[in-house]
Length: 140
Ligand code: IDP
Image (cartoon, rainbow, N blue to C red; front, side, top):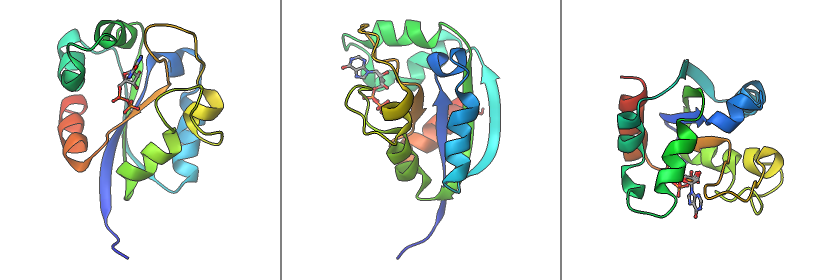
């Protein structure tokens, strides 16, 4: 089995911070054995969000997504571990809170408010390339 250490970007989105779930989310990350490398509370400029979500520009949920991400503070986490990119995506669960598996962050804790954007508590980079790009954006 290949073992290697990699890093990923996790964001506790505004719904997670507003609902006081930052500690619970970090607890799950640490309980899984991942290392916290850096952390900050940030209210990002629109330019940062536009770069972060560049792949979604033009989609129907893009504007509501950016507005949601501007609606309150975000906690950015740099975390490290073997296969942490894939591992955190597994901890987070799938995008839709209603169908995300129980036991995952989204499955256990995220609410489906019936809004134009899924307020699903967390973001996690989806590939090594995304992780490098997003860590450079959020921890410039
Ligand atoms: P991910 O965060 O699970 O990787 P992405 O497809 O990268 O999902 O989408 C980014 C974010 O955009 C999601 O976390 C969610 O907040 C929102 N989103 C994605 N798809 C939809 C949709 O079909 N309706 C509403 N919001 C969506």
